[in-house]
Image (cartoon, rainbow, N blue to C red; front, side):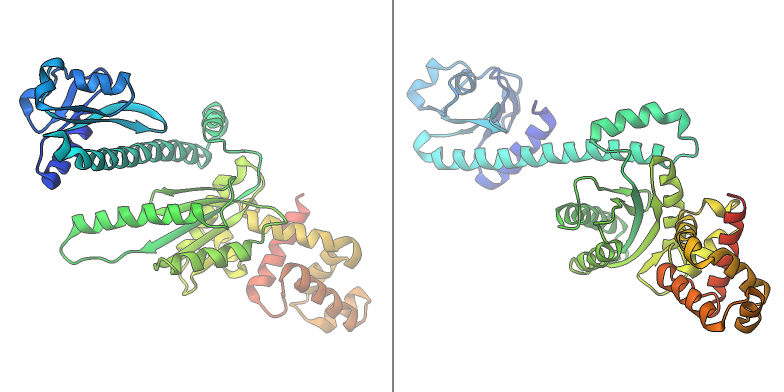
Length: 385
């Protein structure tokens, strides 16, 4: 890490306001890049050069200054980050008087630089994540596929893993009349939230989390071993422990990178859905129906949640003749007697089939208007497949 003159001077000013002594920061060549004595900036300090080359603390007493070009009495400590010397910090004064102070100054300097480096790395990584997500959520993935591959490799993001898009909206306190303070508070909350999610036991190394546009965006891996309800419950508990008021929007399962945009659109619709529930999931039948029937949705069969539901119904077809059963039930306006008569089966047999339908899909067309419409749409999907 190369210490910038700007951050070095900021550190010097901060430390001098506390210890009331002059502080110098030098680069690895012994050039003073920041000082409380402005005239010394950009001058050579031989003591700083020795501290780097000998990798040790250098103390210069008043009667030794003539042996060190550009030096005044004081103590100089090498600045170390990740096991490497990146510069030198010195405190002016009699060595026996400033020895402990200089050591403290070294420690504080390293902590500030380490934090600055982490923030820089975080900012850089977050920009890469934003670029990747923007491309994955774009309309035409074909034209940006090379860029997606490059960014995914840089972030170690596995494109082939099935994922689900989860959006989280939070409410932060709003100090009246202090817009700038509110923005600072939100920035701190945002960093804390992302850190808390990443450090949580519910977050895996293949998941991705960032603040995207106006929501916290989580690309959660989907597998049989990972229970979505368990994850969402723990996610809500995590936010409540911070504590924050939240809304959660959940999209459908994207089996590959090509479906992530659709999952994102479903998550957007869900989180903006007008209801009192904290978690709004596109797999909830009323939300799903309103999504596929919305004016902006030109192709209902592209809804991932509806396709998943359709596949579950398809699995029941060989054993329960479910397509014919539903078609006849809807034609007869959900009348059990008329349907069983037309199918030449007993009423109990029809009820048994409908119980299996509800057990494996959650659909109950005789008891929910939304479910009956979804069954109609599923039959249309099956007819065109």
